[in-house]
Length: 102
Image (cartoon, rainbow, N blue to C red; front, side, top):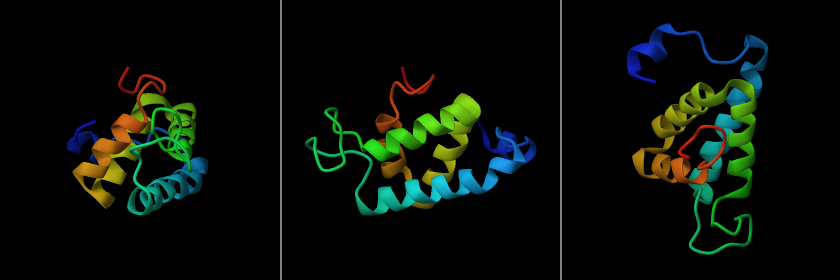
């Protein structure tokens, strides 16, 4: 989703879900700042692939709400909040959820 699309397209979710979406994006930002989305070893909130478990749950919820376009929008917002490096970590943490990075 490019910059122009973000400006002019309706969000990929119903208006009634906006509070949930905003809360989940904020939760992702908190996870990224505090724990990162990836770990060097599994355990303590990270799965066997060293991906943050709650981050993956949120990604699955975004996929349920609005599929790939919803995940792209959330990723964009996290990148805006946390920067490119942590957004890259989020990309990998979400791998194999819906159509995100097969």
